[in-house]
Length: 155
Image (cartoon, rainbow, N blue to C red; front, side):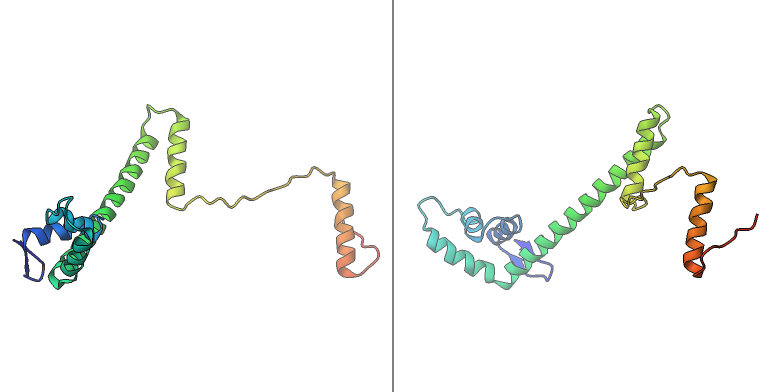
């Protein structure tokens, strides 16, 4: 007998049925496996019986609890995997036996994972101009801003 979280007991077959459904099997397949329905058994009858068993409150509660437990375990595994990767990257970044390019790349990946680096590219155009070209451009801009025809720059 399996005891649920609310104190109700399930038969071993009910427990197996709930476990099989929580692991992703269909109700009919879970019923056939848990209740030893052979190849000669009727799928229609199995479908009917599986529906009845799944609707029992203690079985439904057990299925829900098992599914939530699986989700929690999966989330924990994902967090551990992410933490393991971060730890590995950190060790690669500080390992002086690694080539500098490897250490820098590990730091780059760590920074990206923490949102420190973005893909927002900034393009900067550098022009080489002479002083007289710059002075001429400034005079034109000042003239247009001030509404005058010719401004004299102080030396």
